[in-house]
Length: 141
Image (cartoon, rainbow, N blue to C red):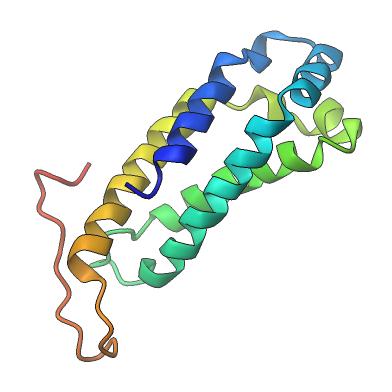
C-alpha cells in the first residue's frame, strides 16, 4: 500500500509525545528525531504525487473531500520540517501540538483509497474514455 510509510512515521511522531512538552523540549526532541521528520515529509510527497492523478472536484471521485485534509497534513509536516532549521516555527507555530495519531488515521484512510484507485482506476487511456469505478460502500470509510 502506498501510504504505509507515512502512516508508520506519523505513529512514530505520536509516540514522541510532543504535545506534553514545553516549547524548548519540543525543539530538542524535533532536532533529535530529524530522520523521522524528513522521512515523513518524503513519504507524504510520494503520496501527493499519486493523489495528483486521482483527486478531482467531481463528487463521484473516491478522493473527493480528502484534498483539503491531505493539504492540512502536508502543511503541518512541512512546518515541522522547516522547524529543523528554525526554532521560531516550533515556538510560535504550534506544529508540535498536532495530534499525530489523528494524522495517522487520516493517512491510513487516504492510503486505502489510493490503493483502490491504483488497482481499479489507473488506466493509460484519456480521461474522457475512462470507465470510472466507484469504491463500494463497504470498503469506503
